[in-house]
Amino acid sequence: SFHETDEGSAAVAEAGMTEAADIGYTDALKAAGHTVTRVLTSGTPDVDALNGYDLVIISRSVSSGGYSSGANADAWNSITSPMLVLGGYVLRNNRMGYTDGSTMVDTVGNIQLKAEDASHPIFNGVDLTDGVTGDFAGIVTWNDQVQRGVSINTNNAGEAGRVIATVATADDPTAGGIVAVEFDAGAPTTTGGNFAGKRLALITGSREASGVTSETAGIWDLTDVGRQIYLNAVSYLTSGGSGGISGISLADGNVVIEYSGTLKSADAVTGPYSAVDGASSPYSVPASKAAEFFIAE
Image (cartoon, rainbow, N blue to C red; front, side, top):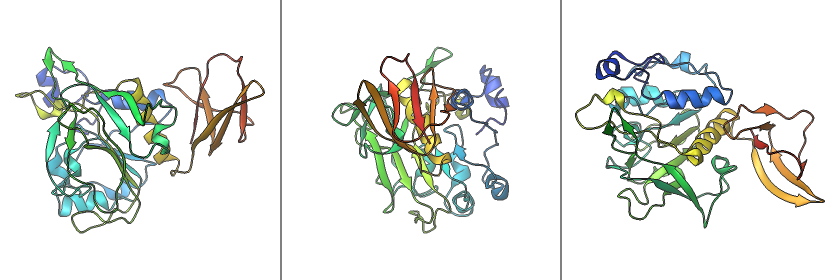
């Protein structure tokens, strides 16, 4: 991130922002029980240090120039830890090579997602209607200035990419653009290299208003649906992609959950989640029980 601490960079402080622009994303992780370490964005990342983390997240609040194709992108792509990318600009074929072009378009209102792979764990617990989510993200306002929406790279994914979600909102200029795409470790980039670890892009975070420092980009723009998808993505990557809820049914007055990995529960959808003692799949929950939320990872 541009912001090495929660207080934010000097540039955003000068602009009147009192916290890191992307603090909403780190706060959501902490509330869900994750430990977060902020690392300053750089074109020359400390690969050995980043390989020591369970997950590396590239915020929307970065300069894409630090990920330019060549030495910068090669260094980032050589990281073996799983990686979650939140910004579309760093995905381009002149950056880290997730896509085959460099076209960028901003959303103009609330967007929904089309689940291109509705079975993917990022959709665990998310209601889909004809394969489409409710509102995923919207337009945010900071300091009385309307930000410019989610920046979507509207080109195609690289040949090894599995598209998980696209923009479903037909009247948005980003309609059909990729919001979530996944690559396995070893998959080729579109710039001639390879991803050393598992990669998942989930595009979110506002673009800064015109005329304001770019370091104010990356403000939280997710709805409750978007929050669930974001936290699901993190759980999926930190569990090695092995966990997830595969089925929910009713039997003998109980809700029956089929899952792999570790079943966790919470009193609120945003967590914090704790492992369910003694649980094994299938796990039965009395329908008369007070409201409870479950994830598996």
